[in-house]
Structure formats: C-alpha cells, structure tokens
Length: 352
Ligand code: ATP
Ligand code: FE
Image (cartoon, rainbow, N blue to C red; front, top):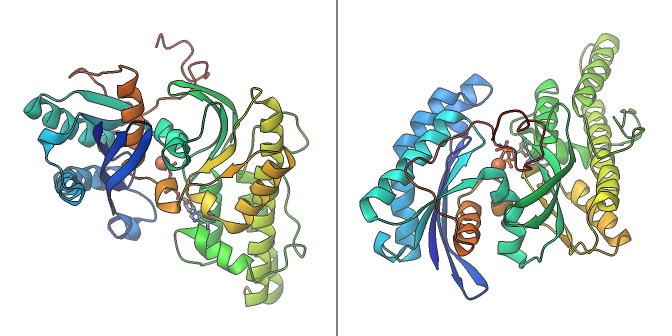
C-alpha cells in the first residue's frame, strides 16, 4: 500500500509518500516547506499569506515527494489530506489540491484529522499497539489522548487557555529572545537557576488532567517588570534564571498531569507517547520519561521532524484509515474545528 499525504493546516506545507508492506511502514519521502520567513515581520502566522503560500507550494511539494520516493501518481493507492482542524484557508488549499489529484487520477481520497495524524505517529515510528496515552503539546495544542484505535480517541484533559509552545513563544518575546521561543528559552534555561524565581503550577491543586499556561506568562511578565523597575533592565543572569523557572513550571505541570492521565487512562496502556514541538524540550522529555518509568510504561518520542507538522503523519493516518475501508469523496469538507474526541463538548449540539 502506498499513500500520498498532504498537509497545509498551519504554516508548513508538506507532501509525503508512505508505504506499508504487510505491517511494516516506510516513509519513502517527506517534504516540508516552512513559512517562518513569510510571517516573521508580522509577529505571527497571517492566515491569508499562509493560504496563498500553500496554494503556490503544494504542487511543488507533491512533485518533490513523488520524485524522492521514486513513484508516480499511478503507483499511489490513495491520496490523504488534512481536512482540519486548522487555518481554514490553508486546509482548503490542501483539500482542493487533493481533490484535483484524486479527480485527475481516479484514486481514492481520504480526509485526515490533523490531530489524528499527530496521535497516530507513534504507530508509524514505533509500531505501538492500542491503547496508548498520547500527550500532544505544541504551539497550538495541548491535550492528553487515550488512543484506542485509528478512529477512537478519548480526550482525558487539555489546556483551558494557551498551549505550552505558545507560552514558550510569548516568554521569548517578553525577554527579547528569538522566535520560535521554545529552543531559545530552553537554551537559556539550561544555564539558569530554576529556584530563584518561583512560578505557579496552575491547576495542579485541582483534580483531573486539565492544564493552564496563560498564568505563567503573566507571572513572567510581572517578574520581568519588577526586575526592570529595580535594575533598569534585565541582567543576563536574571534572564536565564527566569527562563529556568518558567521551563521548570511547564515541565512540572506536564509531568504532574501526565501522571494523572495515566491513572485515568484505560487499562493495558502500551506506552506513554508524545508529539508536538514542545516534545523537543529535553527537560520536559526527561520528566515525562520518568513518569512513564514510574508507571512501568515505555516512553515513545518520535524524531522531531515527525513530532512537528509534516505530511508523513497524514499519509500514515490515511493509510490506517484506508486499511479499515474508509474513503471520502468530492464532498469532503475543510473544517476549521474538528475535535478528535466525539464526546468533546465542541461537537455536542452541532448535530455532527
Ligand atoms: P500545531 O501543530 O499544534 O498547530 P505548531 O505548528 O505551532 O502548532 P509545532 O510545529 O508542533 O506546533 O511546534 C512548535 C512549537 O513548539 C512552538 O511553539 C515552539 O516554541 C515549541 N518548541 C519547539 N522546540 C521547543 C523546545 N525545545 N522547548 C519548548 N518548546 C519548543
Ligand atoms: Fe500540528
């Protein structure tokens, strides 16, 4: 089985070819074109610019992905595409491109939930068996998912405000560090004293797996401003200590809530897995690994290029759906919102 996958839900345009021989998957190619430079001057992703860039680049990415995989469209069994959630213009660009390819080749079309792509990645990289626990922590998302099947996800909890990657990015901004903030703050934190400034551990005093990260940003802003008021600027050591304190707080919340999510998850978990850019953070990874070890679970963190947005995960999720007989047609819709969990409050009452 050979599947072409397309991804365009945020600011990365991706195309990839994934093949499965029996149960053994192989990524034949995975092309990702980022748009950081296009949005840099605006301090965030501009949806209009992103949509146009996706529309311009998807064809090229597809060509490159097919070329690198050494296959032609004729050798593809189906075309998988992110159909949501995400910035609607980008999602539409991908869905239109996939529909065009499907119409031109007569190949089946498979709509994939972007979050399912992230959540199923550990099956592509490590062959994980269901059920497993997934922490998805990125610039746009943060949630614990019990993954029971290709189409069976239970959300155990998540952030009630900002995503942790967003908090890292805002922290970097407040401290005049470069974007994306995660790597910059991590590098500073490694040199700092995490105990000098105390940050809250939001919602840790409450039961459940929900998290909150916007308060951390406010705490950081206050600490920064009082340093500036006192010293007229932020000395280098104060900045590294602020980063260390902030990172420790995010780490403790993610690890503490992961412990609870394991307790709340179905019996027989095969692993604790992570995805999303925040999973690149070594200190956070180490803490999660410890939580998994305490529970006697393997810890699975796919390589970073498969943790952040990419089309290989979409091709893989498409392949899994294809194997189960899922097919979409030309009525496939692009959806800005698409919760994974069918019991999610966002879906209740919408009739979907
Ligand atoms: P989504 O895919 O959920 O729509 P996104 O595209 O922003 O959101 P990713 O590409 O998975 O998400 O991750 C990017 C985020 O990860 C950024 O917010 C970035 O700051 C954060 N990040 C990257 N590296 C690190 C790190 N070492 N430590 C902490 N955060 C990091
Ligand atoms: Fe993503």
